Image (cartoon, rainbow over all chains, first blue to last red; front, side, top):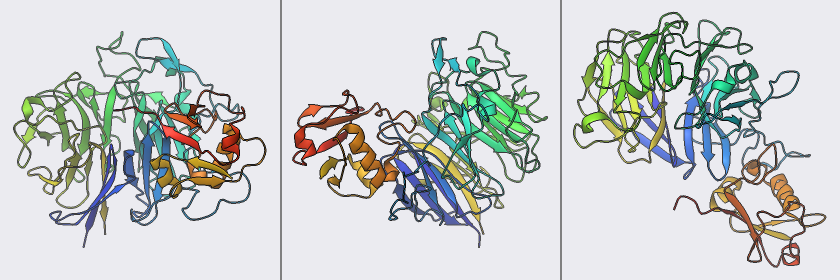
Length: 393
Length: 98
């Protein structure tokens, strides 16, 4: 019997929601790491019981947590609870994210643009996104603020920056979006282990074709009025990028404003906002089995981060964009003013495909019929930062 | 024996209840206390001081004997009352967020 496990990161802890394949009755566990911000949790595709979590706090900084039993127990990698430290200086480096400036493998620590246009030094703040390898449970990528990509090959015990991204040359033109200068999207190409996509707010999307050694901006076709040259190579506030793993060359993007698609691995983008009521938003995702079926949650504007008209509506396109239908059954259609953040939507791979999203109001909704109808799994969690789902069994 | 009081989140992380008692060798300073604390509870590394610079995290303060030592040099001797264990060295989160 299939099961699903939904991993929810919130502003005050993590929650794990589990159900059978019907997705009607749910068990809720949590809060894990109560009181901390959980920007993201994700499971390893190679070992579904291996979970990684980004735990952070404005007071106490960044921690990484790992579970090897599907979320029942957790520990900081390298410092298992209850074990005395090994002789010698304690390593405990699982939360050590230091930009690599070494002459051998690193890049100089340059500056980036600050909100006021002046140059500002790179400073590590937190991990926004964890992306486990498709094949090795001990390899995981971390997208961080200030924007950079880190990789661990020992289950999160030690992290090394993939410095070719930060140091590829356009860094001084990157700038923070409202949430900070975050690397929030990491997409691994299942058909090509050398290829990876990342996205940064506000720098844009980037691709490597040599496993992270070199990177190039892939923002041709994006148009952003908030930068001096609206068609610049970098500087675009990309909010999220999604890809159906069965069709790796096709990408869908929710930019600050504008919903976009690329059919050539990001080399060129075209707008597909079509008849959306507003094309501002954060999330975007793709149906697990229908690669031309995509989902967004339009948000009123960059100044009003809530759904328009007090109605929580997911919009679905079955045509790869441009033609969108509002999905409202089971969602509040009056007096609703929530936001849905960039990592807070996920799809399972059951048939029918399940769609999940979490809101700033603490609701996590599930549709077990590809969006036709929705029901809340939970209604009153802390504000939701991220939602991921694992299809098990 | 040096006594250290941690904020609740760090107690949870270190899996301790109440005060922490530490044997600290040499002069009793912020640095020697935090070195000993992190040696015994490595999971606290990076949560009080930055991993790389060892600078105090901005939203944490160090109090002892009803005084604020947050801005004192890390190698400055702390009061005898802390060194003797009569008074605790307090790590506390800044009041931010209301």
